[in-house]
Length: 75
Length: 148
Picture 1 (tube, rainbow over the protein chains, first blue to last red):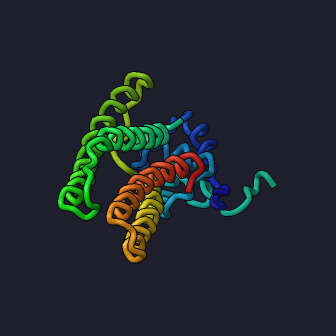
Picture 2: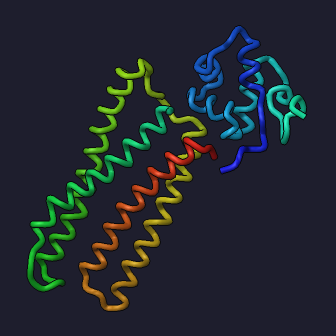
Picture 3: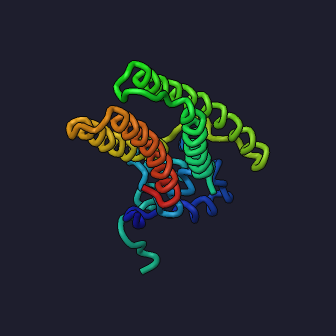
């Protein structure tokens, strides 16, 4: 299965939020740590609801956490 | 390797072991005589029923033992709930598993249509049940590793 087209900045954002652990983020948004691992690896596109919950956990709008297609920073 | 990946591998190995050991235990009890005799039907009926019960019980026991070993070796608690990723992977695994069983079921019915002995039908049904279980575990393993 190829990489999903919905990318994210979760790893970087966790680091910027007092080095939040994957488990802490998972607890905040109500998923297992393995789901956060899968999201960071780009192995899983979250549901819209989970995407909003993650963005809310970082106090950011959705588009600053998730992006569609190639990451503009990497271009 | 994540908890779910390890659990899928354990589930796959235990499914194969349970099936092989059970078949080895039941094979010598196979009754002789006419292929559609009462004893033969009783044998296949009890084969499937006891295999189902043994398999469920063994999976529960193995799952408990696996969780205990996982806690001891990693110091982590196993996930207490299934989130959206788990549910999606479960659905995909169930779909693959179901497809394999349905193909087996159709083949089993086909064997009756072409006048094969009754035992051929039972063997195909049991084998497809086993294969569908294996495919379910392999699908889970694959999707937890490679994503969905």
